[in-house]
Image 1 (cartoon, helix red, strand yellow):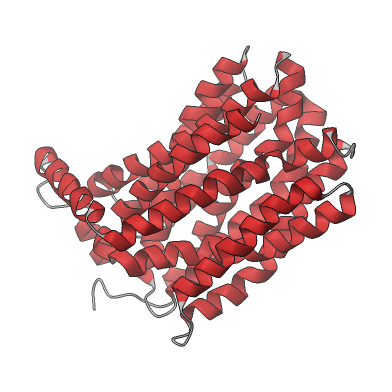
Image 2 (image 1 turned 135 degrees about the vertical axis):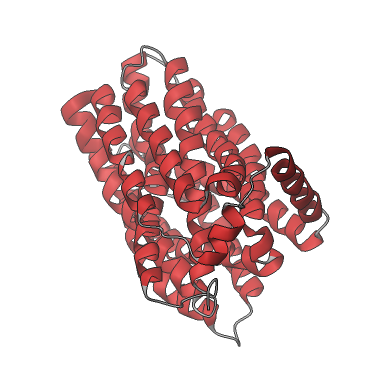
Length: 370
């Protein structure tokens, strides 16, 4: 029946494509900490100024997430992923010619983040159309790409910077980001997503009214607002701790840079191992997803606080490993819970709005901590 979830088939190709999107987007975002010291040395800057690159990147991701809802409504989910890939790749290549931190903030931060956001938000939405009964498992499989991307990109960042410098790094990554266009082309829409994304007679004014109405309806839903507040408070603190763990290990604990970058890979490896487990648990009818989500937030918050008490590579590695195990639950289950709270009709818009709200916290805290 057209528009019904397939629960498999081409849906698994979409999941694999989504894993690559997650890997390139979140692998790059999470490994920003590896670039801090090289950027500081290259542009003779300090933590506070360099922190704006990551802060604006996450803000750009939030803006891109909101834009993605309109792009999906006008052009479709597949086109949204491709457009995001074009913006990300072009921005990174231009960033390779940067002569100041300000230029990096604009191209490696704002514009690149917007490209990330457009591609990212469209990915779980189209996966949601392909799967219903296995939605948690499929989403966790796709988001596992973020863990694998972190595991691979963090050490590669150090290698690229060491061999080609910070400018060469952005040039190479720009080429990699264009692969988002390739995997985006594989995200073939179902009849349902096509009918929602491409009306037979597009009317821009009508589309904008529909989007505004959806936004107003979402903001009236108390469960959605509570969800956004929990994400805002948690991510503002936790992502900042993740952002500075490598510089902290290098400068405060005196760990060599290459070895310090392995902390992110350790967390990513643990996260990969836990993805499938949390995906299976999330699909069990007896499991309360909201309770599981709350437990994951609590454990991750404790891990974020514990970093400041660690004074050796071994202790930091243990904290990173435990954190990674529960990040595997957070990344997948939070998106599934959002679909449960608002339904597929509001899913794309809700994901875009929540990304914007999350961006407020992640914009402010990195420069303040720096």
